[in-house]
Length: 280
Ligand code: ATR
Image (cartoon, rainbow, N blue to C red):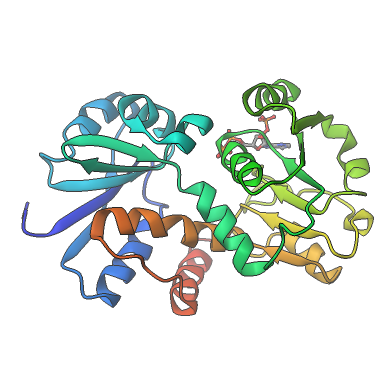
């Protein structure tokens, strides 16, 4: 392995589906940076040993994906947002110390800012569907931007209750069966469940109940236009898609590893979108 290049990687199991190499290698080429971004297929039981020897392997940092996000959190020194969320997706070495953060927060917020400028001017209530790691990042982000009330609904109610305990009184819980009724006064609807993903059932919701200025965001990005987003667009609502979030979440990792804040361009979006279509 050459050590002249700055190198980063995505660590996962499986890792083949990850679009991070496409994104980061696009930026490396665009900015003429002598670097490399690779895939590393690492089993759960081998993750700790891998993460602890990142530098010896020639890496300045890494993305972590399923199933390593909680393990990476436990093995590193997380920043404040990663501690609040309890899972990390980005690692970097700082003076020999393995640091970590969760860039899904700014991925979600920056994409929302790009798709629905001034969305946070009058938020009132946000309705978040799902209660996994992605929901934690979304809720942390919404709270940080001053959203007054976040209602979380999840198929398994106990996981939604755990989010209320984690994030406090501005987070409330609704029954999964009550989602339709909760739409009526929501300013923002965010799907963080896997419903609507290629091969999964669609999220069956009647968006006619949403107000005309409501915004709909989905974290699913295969397909890019989920049934939920398609219905929202038919209804004339502003939408923020999961592909935009994926691209924006990659920005901070690139900056940490390669020292330049990259731009989310239309060209990059088209490149990743074309690759996603091939896999469907
Ligand atoms: P992540 O950490 O990436 O957000 P996760 O923890 O697997 O992923 O969460 C997936 C979310 O999709 C969960 O909220 C899950 O609901 P449960 O907590 O009840 O499992 C939700 N989900 C998955 N399949 C679903 C389905 N068929 N109906 C409703 N919710 C579903």
